[in-house]
Amino acid sequence: MLEGIHYNFIIIKMTTNPERIQLIIHYLCPYAQRALYALAYKGIQCEITEADLVDKPSFLLEVNPLGKVPSLKVIQDGREYHLYESINVAEYFDSFPGPALYPRRPDGSINPVEKALIDINVKLVADALPATLFPHFKTTGTPEQIEAVKKILRTINGLVEGGGYLMTKTLGRNELTFADIILLPFVERIVAWKDQFWSPLVEGEDFSNLWAWFDRIMQEPWAQRFRVEHRRLINNMTQLRTPGYKGLTLPITNYD
Image 1 (cartoon, rainbow, N blue to C red):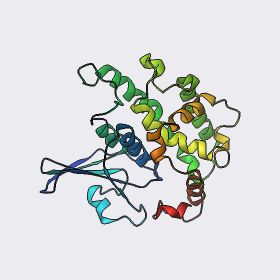
Image 2: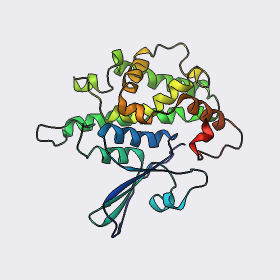
Image 3: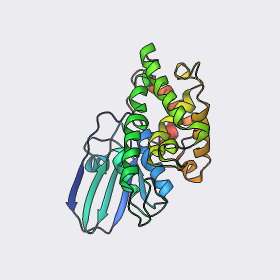
């Protein structure tokens, strides 16, 4: 479930297969959800293949030797490309036609200044949150680790004032961007677990802006498409905290 160390790889080999895209995921992996939410927001048609992350299938390891998800196989112009890491895959999806996650200029090109601002926000906030959450998956973290989560959640809560999107204050307009997509799956888990497993992470805090941001996004049809059912997230965390837990398995009904 935890993506761990980040590597950036693109592997290319020749193929005679027709052009297509295959996204390999596990629906309960928050990193895979980043790619799925980007896919849904853009309205991209794509072959989605589930992979067991304990008994890792050969088709996953062929695309990604690290055996992690999301992993993407792209066949284009007679060549086969292997892409992985959630941010890279989601950014690739934003290159497709459709609503933009990175703001575009009138000619359709990405606004480089605004992209840089979004990428900074992703690094310092949206992709920084998971690192503070990691100590709390297996057990309750130390007071210092709890405070680290609260600190970044306070920052996010201030950015999404009134339930606005994450980059509203920076860009001067309220529109969903790449930063919201990268943040979304981890707030989804905080919302699911905050009343039971992760109550220490939110106790004594007013994160009402953040909850409003989450509720607003989750009302969108594209977000509902890959939202994880509440019971599955609860059962996922129960298994995570069971001795001997090895990782996300299939079928997905293991979490019902």
